[in-house]
Structures are given as C-alpha cells and as structure tokens.
Length: 353
Image: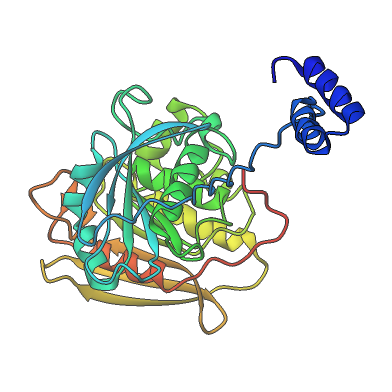
C-alpha cells in the first residue's frame, strides 16, 4: 500500500463514528500495509550431485597386440602389450619381456613367438621398448650403477610400467615375471633381484648375472671373456628362481657367463644344492643339456639350458626376425612354463618404491 498513514487515519475516524464494518475493513487494509519483518529467504537445498564413479580402463581385447606409452615420475617408455585369446574375465599372469640391443619390442615379439605361447598357456605379455635417446643401440643400460638398483633408473621405470599394466589388465599380482635376451637378459636379472615383491621368477637368455660391473669397459670385458668367479659371486642375497638359456658357441656374450647364475645361488645359502642333468635334441637338430638345481626334492631354484652349437640368438625363435636360432630347443615355451609354475612370495619389510 502506497499511503499507510492515510489508511490509519480513516480507521481512527471510523472507530469514533461507530462504523464497525468500516473499521474492520480499514484494519485489514492497515495490516496488509504493515511492512513484514525482513527474514533471510531460505534457498531450497540443491540436490547433491552424484559423485562420478571412477571406472578402470577396460583390459585390451583378447587377441589384441596394442602399442602404448607410459609416463610416470620414473620417466617415459613406449611398449607393446599382448592380451591372449580366451576369456577376458580371467585374472591372468603377466610376463615382461626385455629385448636385446638393436631390437624393437615388435621385432622381439615376432622372433620369440611368445604371443603364441601366451595363447596356449594363458598369460599377458608386456614388451617395454628401450629408446634410442637412452641408448643409441637400444641396449638396456645394465652396466651403469644408476641402472642396477631398486628405486632408480631403468629398474624403477620398468617396475612402474609393470604395475601400470597390472592395474590396466587386472593381472594376477602374485604371478608376474620378467625375462630378456642379451642386454635385456642382464637387465631382467637385475630388475628381478631388485623387486622380489613384484616379480616371482626370472628368465635370462644369452645374458649375464648381476655383479660388480659398473663401467662399459668392464661390461665389454665380461661379454668377451666372462666374469671372474670372485666378482660373479660377490653378492650373496638369495636370487629369485631363474631359468637360463645360453648357446655354447655364443661369440657376443661368452658362454661362461651362464655360470654366474649358479655361483650366485651357491653363495646365497649354506644349504647344499642338488642337481640333475638331462640330455636332449631339439626338432631342429640341436643337442642340449638341461640341468636343474634345487634345494630339497621340489624347490628348483635354477634351470640351466646349454644349447650345443647355438650362437647368440633366441633358441627356437623364428627365422624371419633378428637374433634368433630356429634350430634350437623352444626357449619361449620352456621359459614360460618355468615362470608360470611359480608364485611370488610375500616378503616382509620391502617398500613399494
């Protein structure tokens, strides 16, 4: 109402004249004109927005061979990832494969034929790829002190990539393994020993045991002549279960380097080792000696394959790829079976760095 005081004046006059009806009407009019006390208007509560549900990226389709790029605090790395044929609902083991010098992830996968073995036995295969900027020949830098320990360099980067793929593919965390050829084999031995809480077993083809090598010149000497027993056995921590392949005619990495794995095992425990050797011949005509070293009746800690007449190449590999020995026994199947037969123990007091 625009003139509340005039209305009140009329109300008073009407009351004096006894006009009750007029007074009541004016009273109502005055009450309507009286300003209401200011109260903060309550805004209706907005409905809480549902929080977005974090959804894990789907595992790559069965039978797919995809390219990937990983970036983390440890660095960046390209890789290829194979998901085997079969049910995508299974929790699958994971085998990490480290290529040799001058190779790519794709070349290494083609040469080893490991994807076909993965279809047969049911496991994921991760192929990290070394960059030319890290090493001009794409070798893993296993000879450098900064790449020989937990929490640093290439071991930390490969371990971080491995964990990324475990999460991506919902892989079995207690059935993860690492293997490699030549420089990749030497790197696999280092990485497997540095991360026993991640990798349950190791495969090394034409590589070297971890040791006290800290320079490129020392690495070249070991490759040409082998490692002195005192150096190869200097570290006494218990090595992970390991399978080793080596050709006895290897002119790139001296065959005596295969003995370094046995020296490590012997010096890691006072328990005597039991051994059993068997002879065989591959379908391609190569003779071989397979020796098992174990503690007790069933605890095989080292499986050593000597391929007689074999050179520096993946035994039983495919001829159209680099660095293979098609005539040799099937290293891919033997390595996969050895690895998959083991589960990672749960060590105490080891941080996930």
